[in-house]
Image (cartoon, rainbow, N blue to C red; front, side, top):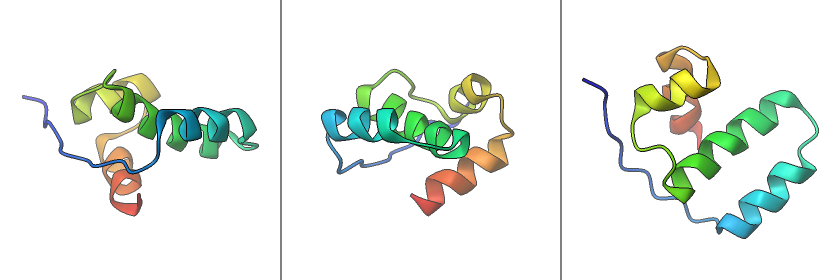
Length: 67
């Protein structure tokens, strides 16, 4: 069973969209996209994030902890 998460994102959707369009590196874009998906409600489970990004779950967990 996938782990749901409770993550409070303080940035607005507009701010995240602007940041995503200004991101220069692919790593930065991936991480911003992860936060944007959670903020907009497109993704509600940890496993879904790792599948969409094609990353290991531990990588997604580390990114979320750093956020």
